[in-house]
Length: 221
Length: 221
DNA sequence: CGAACGATTGACGTTTCTCAAGGCTGGTGG
DNA sequence: CCACCAGCCTTGAGAAACGTCAATCGTTCG
Image 1 (cartoon, chains in turn cyan, blue, yellow, red):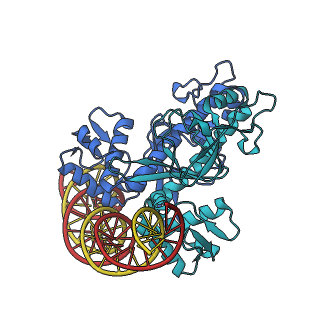
Image 2 (cartoon, rainbow over the protein chains, first blue to last red; image 1 turned 120 degrees about the vertical axis):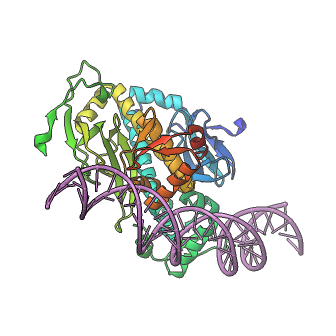
Image 3 (cartoon, chains in turn orange, brown, green, yellow; image 1 turned 180 degrees about the horizontal axis):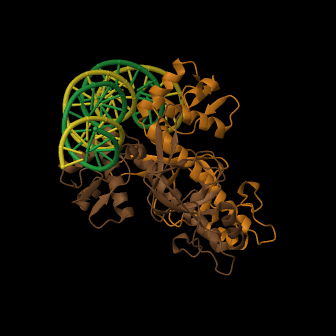
């Protein structure tokens, strides 16, 4: 594992915590995880904070009988793992994923010295909170089609694809993100397809073109 | 409305943001809301941060067709309303509720001057995030009985009643917190009652004694 | 080419919701 | 003080949504 850690570029613009350039540079490492590989486990001590360079990550919690709830998908540019001292989710690479890492403790040092860094930490946590709060409404009160539509709208924004959504995650991942089963996700997609809102491209069905964004949004309140 | 604002006690131990006593005291106001009264509305500018002195508050989001998701219940001692510039939920008093208020802007000033205050803000936001993240799993992956059991466990901790839980909120509130209907909540309580885990006290049924905490926890993973 | 994996689809089962009726409680006014 | 009313809760029956199980299909990869 360690042999795959390479020295990253401290000046990498991706890893912008608003760090004052007069301070000593933070050591940024780089690492590649393969498809399905675990990045950290729930309840492990949080040693690093991560930023996705390429690829996609899922974080989730498990119940003892195997039920899974995905907390978030992290895509290129997203920062994750900064929640608390202990990781509250397990994180896995969905596909081959390159990440940048910095030690949490180094970041904490900086935030004590520079209020701007502290402010940035707070605003990232707040953005996180906002996203999760919106998902409460989604999980608690929306139908399967509304959930899937909202998911597609979110991914459409975040993947910023011009024409075709190339979803990195499987139907099961989507289901566990939305509190559904994979079959229900598949049926909801079929419904949106029949409604003329979506077009399936490539044949692994992970490539989806949104034909009618207006129509899709109408499923999402 | 304004006539009910009284000058509060800046030294009130309840409103401890870890504020350095060398700084000028923050003005703390006090206010009483009646049962059902709105405290602030979703998307309104966030002028104040609140702490419940007595009573109980619900915060929620609505869909256009009336579906409601309660984000949180705030009980005596809880601080709420500090999320962002704009309120992301509507807040209402469930019963007659006394709150303390401070201006958000004053708090922001303090957090710039004192890193300890900033840290406390961050840790409150993080605690908030933790709670909401746990509810994702609850809403997405648990059965009605598990949801209700988890709710009772949470209230048992937070209300810290020696013997009897005196729930301030209605069945509908509980339902909208858990993503269920009030009938399903009622049936889940009946089931826990029949299982010998609960005993109903007073007859408005808002007073519940947990007979078997172990048994209740076994419904909650 | 065959095996493995993921997605779709159908038939059926279970959970939860909806609609409706009835009961208990507390407050109000006669 | 009692009767009535309004609000909330419970309970039941039937409907709808979603989950489960199983078969099939298409792709990918060895």
